[in-house]
Image 1 (cartoon, helix red, strand yellow):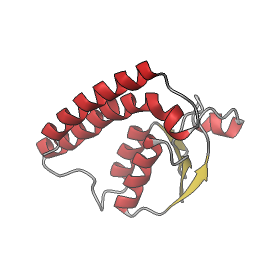
Image 2 (tube, one colour):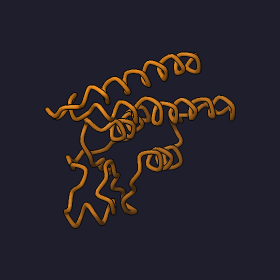
Image 3 (cartoon, helix red, strand yellow):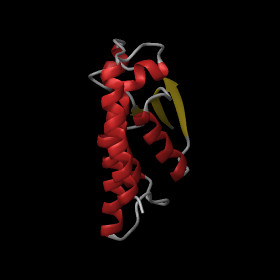
Image 4 (cartoon, rainbow, N blue to C red):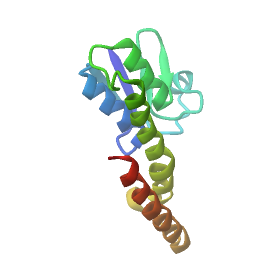
Length: 142
């Protein structure tokens, strides 16, 4: 049985969880926070980052590596179209989201999710970049 380790505020955790659910793969979940110093966690993910996936063969870390593994190991329900160009367009969307939406929005997480504060300068910069990126995403996500 696969075990997905991490926490639900992580978009990378949710990327893997969504792949597991879409493919209909049974799995367990284990709450693990980023930065854990637990030896078992560090053996599975050397930087203590989440998500990571425990399999019968060992552990995998990095969300895209995990999704690629799931796609190869469980091919019955593909996440990508068979057509190479269509599959590349799907990958284009996922990379765009990671780099131009999630990475920018991450600067606001302290305030949005953890009770911290973010300077007005950071908020303004993120708002400007997200506005630009959302408009661009709408163009490629047709």
